[in-house]
Image (tube, rainbow, N blue to C red; front, side, top):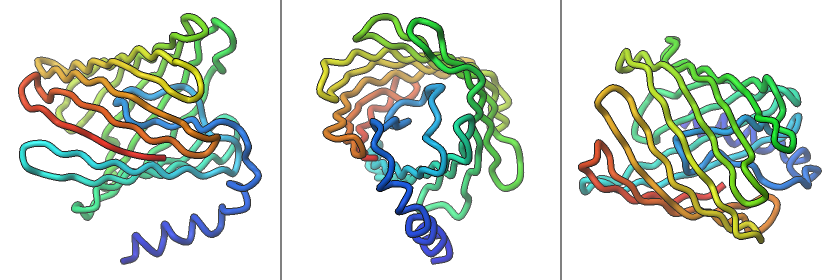
Length: 205
């Protein structure tokens, strides 16, 4: 209940900022890799996901609050878990034309640093874009690399393919995203966990 009240308060406090923001939506759903972009200052974004795998449905909520044009605070919660992950992303270099964008992201779970990653985002052409992340997670004590390739058809419709490698663990997924206005996106993706367990995920932002 406290979690719902907190999130509701944030939404009410930031509602004017959302109304003033007219730029295109820049979500971090549904890929595991993230881009170097941060939200406009004082804007707020909510992303909701539903994942089904092995006869289990998992719901997650992701919240982003931009505190400047260089950084944002992030909150990830799985609704069946009492723990929340709090993080921050700082933009180091803005992507411009064919110059790559750079950022760094760090997460805390239960007061412990659990994930740190370097983010690279690169425009390949007017329709192709790639993101590459390299990081370390204390959950497994391993380094990882995740990369995604995006193709846009225009009018907010895009597809992607992605691979995640952490030691001997490999995950593959692909999906479709549709931003049907400047503030709303829906997405659908499928993949294989550890190249073995299939899953399907739907979400919106």
